Image (cartoon, one colour):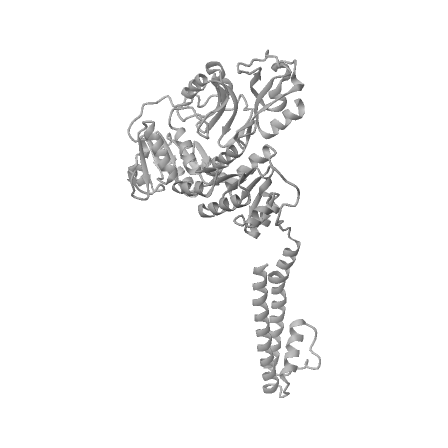
Length: 544
């Protein structure tokens, strides 16, 4: 609205100036060319009549060329100013009047919700997770235009200042389960301090961009301080080291010695080129394939005829021994380490974390960065072939792209793939929307910062929930399925009916993981199932 007011003021000032200018010109012209002097007020009336197309009264019979030209120019000017006023002034005013404005406070009764202070891509992932578990949320957005935009997109948002007591009270912070501060480092500490003033007991989670500032978030009163970039670096490094891990860095424990993990199929693995049905994964290792990412697209359950390639990431469950056996299958058959076989491109926080993890694992590596700083082996540009050659790209087995700009990552991927068609490319994406483009450019594994940090936030906030989420696209959940009591897994045919996979059964304090079609479900059993949001919803509607 302020923009509209400024625009209107400028238009009115310009209009008044133009009218007065034409009135002076008309007054002069009638005396000089028509020899019929007019008062200035009469001249002003004629100009207004011309601009508004309401007629000219008695002044309609001009004879001189000068006056005729003046009237023509005035006519055109008046029409232009009228039509200019429509898109510049009236249309925005109508749009403003008809727009749906975000509320300034939570109107309905709400409790046990999550207050998210400012909206970011990682907040979008967090909201998806919260909606999955039916946990209410409120976004507190200080920018009015952004708040209105989010409101029109269907988000639960209010326009308020998250750094003010009044703003957090409008979000009903005192009845919330948690607050997430997700702005800049300085603003986040202010939000945490304000939250403590409103309610000392509410759980507060702060996202820190610079890890060395985490201490000040703690001092401000944050219960948890999360550093997404460090976690992203650890996650990317785990794709090179040989330990079994999930995208979040740790396997998810279902029962004693039974876990769920993500395992990427490495370029050069014997599994590449085979289908799931022909791979022998189940027969050789005993693991259960819950789902798979094919070039960034998650499928659960995966088609048995789906072909595995260097960009496939398997979501599997099994014992530690079974997962280690599968890990061996997913790795390249050429395993010997040689100097420079792993190249890290980018030495920011993510790149430094990757380098530290590779050093701890004893994996030789070379670091390329534009800036000459400690830990950088080659100074150069990731998009320049000569600089990449100097870093050993042509002989590398794995390249990890840890650049902060997605466009640079996409271009560097194309160049690297051209220089070394057989190299495995692991890439960081700043935005989830760019993941598909990186796969198209030739990356084998891409992990988005917003996805990792969103998962991280959800895991922290939902720690008391009896559910586990690996990704916004798949759920791992424990359910009591009374409707299946007395039937066998084969008779229930859960996978084909719902798309979910039963990965374990909890019975009398024990966890059954060796599940064949003849295993009978008892009425008091709790099933651990995995599937997409839609699949879990189908399961619950059919069997709960």
